[in-house]
Image (cartoon, rainbow, N blue to C red; front, side):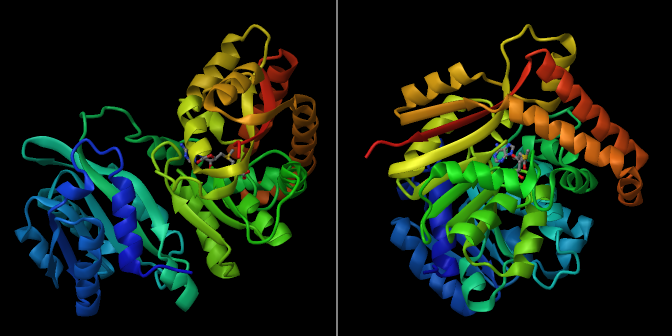
Length: 441
Ligand SMILES: C[S@@+](CC[C@H](N)C(=O)[O-])C[C@H]1O[C@@H](n2cnc3c(N)ncnc32)[C@H](O)[C@@H]1O
């Protein structure tokens, strides 16, 4: 069952406002729609007041009219950007107008169909553009804080179009930043998960995976759930380039919602799902600590080697708990801290990556205080060591092939990185851990 685009957007706006300091659903009054399609405008006019009872919806047919709008609590820009998406200057003007039109704390939705765009990864470039753009509005350094980038469900079901997107942001005042990377998404995309870096990683890990052991290892891990059935639902946190999500749909018929904060990673997953046309798999570019997943809605939550990136394991576990159905299960593998004295080299690796490493005892305690039951943990480090050794040998033994695709710098960095990790394991600094638990019925 898919929702109309108007309902999907309105629900998403409602979710983005959960916990908002500025607006509650009943305080949303001024809703502005910019769309060339009069049918779409009238459907927005019907749907918005159903969820936002005091909202008054005004519609505009051209982008030029954007500059006349002020104090919008919600603004929806529906498929009017066209060729602007390729022109930085025009995008800047557009974004400045959006920021001027919207109240602080207000929600901005931009919908654009990128299926016919020449660059299948344009979603990553646009996300980056919107996410880091800042302008002075009302003397404040203003920008758009990313809530989510979702696929339009109706386009998937009716037109097999997996590249029709809408971005949801809230307008915020930001402290002036002097950092090289502006947001955490920007950090992930510019450091560990750059465009070429992702493919070099994939070469070493295996097709569609950015985690140790590739397809076979992931299948072994996913089978630990024990009872996956066709038609059940799974949230995959940190889905990367999509290998795990596609595997669980293919092997078990599970319907997966894969989320990832790196737009470079998810753009690869999206490009591939557009070719495969598998409607069981859905993706969003979003932060696991920001997205308000629907409560009691997933049979499973899976996460493969992502949560070391996430500060606040307690908050994450609470969110996972809330979104699981009663009796639902969570399975996570993660990089963790060992029990040896941490070397300076290891500490600097962890801080460079912005990792937050926990040991298994800490994970178990957090799981217990969250309310999980049937908690099972396992130290997978011996297997990690085996896999790292195999992967390093594969790169070394196929150096020529690697260098036909990637640079010497990438080769050196992978071999050095894998060797360092083996050293951290020998010092009992670096662990690889598994956590499985259930939400009580
Ligand atoms: C090592 S990769 C694993 C990818 C995938 N699970 C796999 O097995 O191939 C970790 C992923 O977690 C994602 N990630 C990091 N922080 C995140 C966050 N706060 N919310 C969602 N995803 C996040 C990264 O962008 C990255 O794609």
